[in-house]
Length: 257
Image (cartoon, rainbow, N blue to C red; front, side, top):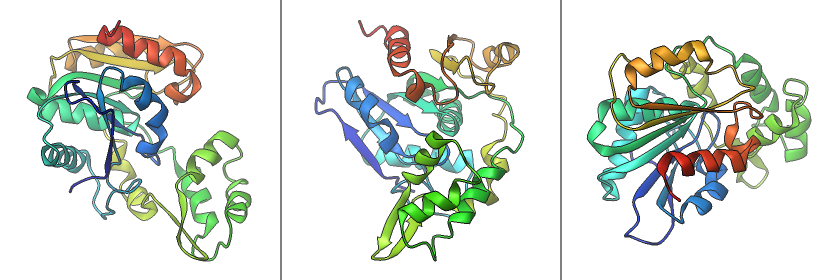
């Protein structure tokens, strides 16, 4: 599957940096950071399958998402790149590094571990179903329907960014709700037991429990050239909650200054 992608930066002499969003997100979430990082890179923002402007498909697994990414990069002539992924995107780039190590200059994983996670998105799916896009007539109505299930304003706004007018008077989600809900166990699955020896950054939020110190030994077993950085004042959305610290950690890791 060829994925929708945007290229930020216009210098062909700069190396590539591929950025993958998390569950329910899209490449649009990363445009501000991509513009900053385009000082050093040609940044490729990718919408993973069933997200953003990329095609929808009933099937969803990390093997499929890795193959999507490989096919997309081949289609635009990218032989090797730096890779950065947040949350689900972090799992995708980890799988990609395991499957295609020769294509990865460095790997940056944002607040995601290698372990399997228990299901914890039920309330979000209930909120999305409550919107009932087939009969919802305004974005304001959608907001009022999702609010009882997801009272946190920032999470509401994040999800509602993917609500759009598919035609006059008819709303739709850019992400494929049925496919994500059906395949959530695969999305939360553990990483295969295969080593990637390239330079790797695990950047985590101190207020998040996705990666805790007890996870470090298992991560280092699969990624022996790993560097751990924690941003204490950030939660799971490290890049949004602590953008300056996030970018500084990336700069330091890649020795950009």
